[in-house]
Image (cartoon, rainbow, N blue to C red; front, side):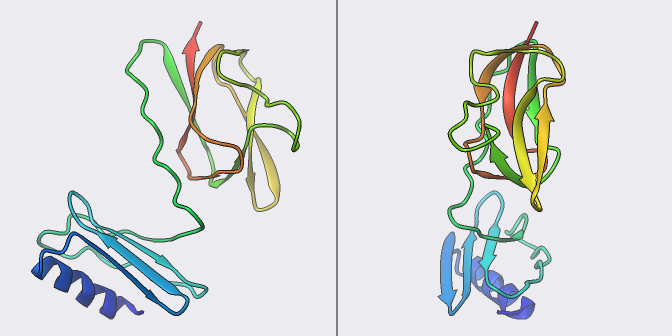
Length: 161
């Protein structure tokens, strides 16, 4: 499916006021949801092109590869004073421990110090240790072991000392 076909499909869905649409053709899978923001997800073994936003009802169009199950959106934490959010500095895979079967670096309720390793993010076969920037107590862990994560995705909420 090329860019022109995707654009025509989106315009048709807007015209007919269809909120959700899914198409699977060979190794290409397209899922479109409309509403506040329209999302286009495409899965294929061949590279794809991002589709420019369509004017009118479609507020935003994003093309992204789908790998397995879609990642759950990061859960928001209640606004609380002295709550520091540790975010991923890179795209990769989240690991809570140094090796399978080993205890996690940090879990909810643990006290952490500045520079203490919280998790590992694997990117391109490199293991990147993510360290705490603040001292405090881990209130929430927002990623699960082995989960693919995005740049800037929230990983931990820490109540500062």
